[in-house]
Structures are given as structure tokens and as C-alpha cells.
Image (cartoon, rainbow, N blue to C red; front, top):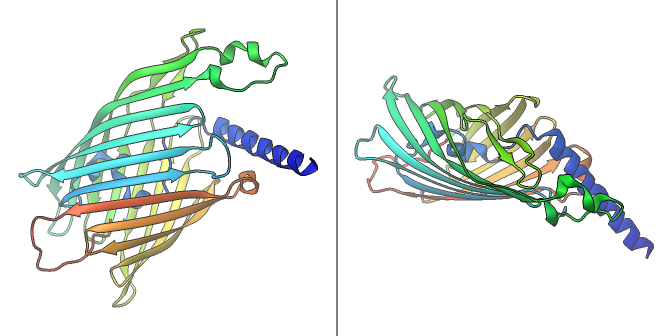
Length: 316
């Protein structure tokens, strides 16, 4: 019985910490990705077309495993250059769940390429689509001491259609890249249909991303990258990552996210078409005592219709 009490206490404390962490970070609502350097299209529409092939990417992220109601994110992206290779189109589908809170978004991307020099290009991008948000407040289990009648937890928040658009720019070559984007320009609200309570459901986020590749030898390359995320009402967050490419087939690296976590990344490349990636994060706050870490799995595939004289993997 004592063991059960300890387990329930630990579980309750873990859930409480997760809720408090969510409250302190409500201003940052977009999902975070450890493998952001391979998943740039979700935050920057100008990234579409940089593969120069028809490409597909699927990613699943399970955050703070072992805690009930912890965030789960499922992402699917497609990009394809048109016959006019300066223009490319893309599509992003994201399903994000945190407890009883659910967000489903569908956005299309358009990017246009401008030649800057013989080795570098600039892409300008537009993103447009919608997000569906729902939260069944009555489904929360509340204490019997007055909590059941709390008007805050009555009714359901349901915003079936919240349109939005975003913009982005992406400067790149085979050795470096820099991107700046605002994937959601409009600030949308949701409303509780029980007490007409309104709150901001989508905030404007600003992303700055950059990376470079350095040769360390015949079979080893080093790629440092960083991502900066900023929005009103929340601290600026930085992701710093270093990845090593071994024999053009295997990525291995580590990351650090300020005030949040550290982790490790691995990716296998098969025939320059198929990529399998895995990442694991560990919290650096009190959640580390209750969580089994955050796990992220990514799969991407490219359809290459043209034969290239020199076959080499893309680095970004």
C-alpha cells in the first residue's frame, strides 16, 4: 500500500510539474523539434524546393514519456519543384496533442528561388492554411470539493477553422544556410462556448535558423546549427546542435535547448534517398525526475527522376 501511495504521489507531482511548465510557456505554442535541421519546412515555407526533388518527411515526437497527457506531435511534409525550377510547392500537416487539448493544422507552401551567386541561392516563401483547435474542458477529472462546479472547466473550446498565413526567407548553398520566418502572422483567438471566455489560440512566433558544414577529413564532416525562437510574453529560446557526418552515410550529434533540455541525434542515409532519424531529449528541470525523456523518430524519402554525375547527400 505504501508503494502505491509513493507511486501515485510521484505520478501526481509529475503531472503537476508538466502543467506548471505548460503554464509558464503558454506564449510559445508551436511544437519544438530536436531534428529541426531536417524539418525546416514546418517553420519556414521558403525551405520548400531546397531538396531539388520530390520529397516526403514524416516525424513523430512523444514528449516527457511516462507522464499522462504529455505532448505528442505528428508531422507530415511534402515538397516538390515545378517544371520551372525556380518555383516549388509544399504541404505540411501537423497534429499536436497535449492532454485533452488538440491542434490539427494544414498549410500549403510556395517558394521562389533567386540566384545570388554561382554557389548560393535565396528562396522567398509564403505559407497559407488553417488550424483546428479543440479542448473538452468537462472531460477533466476535478476534485469533488467544489472543483466540479468550477465554471472554468465547463463547456468545450472548439475553433473549427482558424485561417493563417506565414512568410519566410532562406539563403543557402551546399556549405551553409540562414533562414528567417514567421510561420503564423495572424493572432487568432478561441472562445469557450459555455461562458464566452476568449483567449489567444495562436501567437506570432519568429524563427531564425542557421548552419554550416566543415570538412574534418576525407570521411568526416561537422555541421553546427542553431535555431532561435521568439514570441511576445516568453523568453527567447535557443537550440544549439552539432552533428558529425561519417562516410556520407551516418549523422551523429548532440543538442542543447536553453532552459529546457539536452539530447542526442542519429540519422542513417540509404542510397541518398531514404533517411531514418532518431533523437532523444532529457529535461534539465524538475521534470527529469518523472519523465523517461522525449523520443523523436523521423523518416524522409526523395524521388530522384534525374541522374546526377556526382552523387552526394544534401547537408540541409
